[in-house]
Amino acid sequence: MFGIFRAERAEAMGDPMETAELQQNAPTSAVRVVIAGLLVVMGVCILAFAMTGSNAANKDFVTYWAAGKQLVRHANPYDAAEILRLEREAGCKENRPYFMRNPPTSFFLALPFGLMSEWFAAMLWSLLLVASLVVSIRMIWVMEGRQAGRLHLIGYIFPPALECLTIGQVGILLLLGLTGFLYFHKTRPVVAGLSLVLCLVKPHLFLPLGVVLILWCVQRRSYRILAGIAIGLAGCLLLTQIVDAAAWSQYFQMMREENLKGEAIPTLSLLFRAAIDLHAGWLQFVPVVLAAGWAVWYFRKATDWQWNHEGLLLLTVSVMVAPYVWLTDEAVVLPAILHGIYVLANKGRSLTPFVCIVLPVLAGVIAGKTMDSWWYVWTSPAWFVFYLYAIRSEPRLVVASV
Image (cartoon, rainbow, N blue to C red):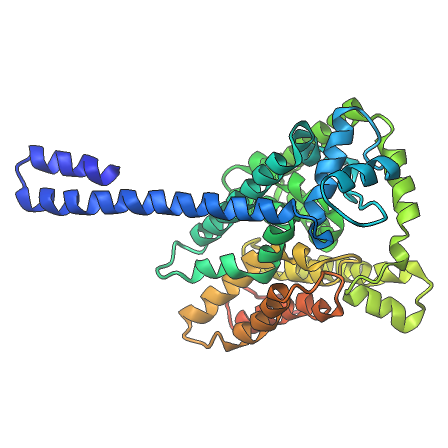
């Protein structure tokens, strides 16, 4: 469209060569936009169909939809009998319900979809995830200096993000929240704080990072970021009180009955617990506590803390040591992965290590390996190791001597 306007201006100014060139290119650009839009619509429809099928593996989105249906009626979103009934109506064949395990502060995600039919809600949810991924990758590209080339397109084949799109998980929304913070924390701190509310959907993924964030805000007097977080959190709590005043007691009851400590989640934290005493559930939180202590030390020793550099290392550590983390949750490390790729490319170093990591993970996703497969136990440490490899000689990551 802009090309057409430029052609009209060139014609008015009497430049026939520019007019002819722009008139030729403008329709081509318009056609590309239309084709891209159609491809997005087709992709969303395919994802919506996949998420509304009878395949039990596609249960993730349905849990949010079923919880939303309950919230619209001011009913218990963790009611086993009702959730199972709704999920069966949607096509799931399981004999037990799958709950939205996110805390009640996440109701703002589920509530709107409870007003819709299951298929229409799945379509909008798919569109939301696709749009969130596009916006996140765009912001990362801008933060990396709008570098030439198409390396940022690697983000669209990042296996955790692809898995989120396939089964309708919220990992991409967490990515959007984190990327929004990284993008706005210098220019629009309140918006940056509000963005982090999305990360509170799964706060256990960001515990070391969260500790450092509070210390950094106090040290830099960035209280507007904390104000943004407080405003967003207050809004979530108010919504929770309005739609289900008993939500917190219902949530903790569901978590006890679900027996998460007995669930085999492919994480380093569970391996650590199993190596010492599998029956001691508290051991699964030891790695994240130790990592939080290291994060405080690292923050205090860093000469010039920058969230788009030092903070990305802390991000990969936070995800690696989380007590509960699925492959889809690892979508949040995409800013670190793309930053590492750009560092390697700019220095003329090989991307082979990234390829060696991403291909087996991508193969698992394409082969349909479920998220509880131990095939994925190595993925979060692999992202951490790749980032270390990429930035090992980057001057930004400097720690003062003790």
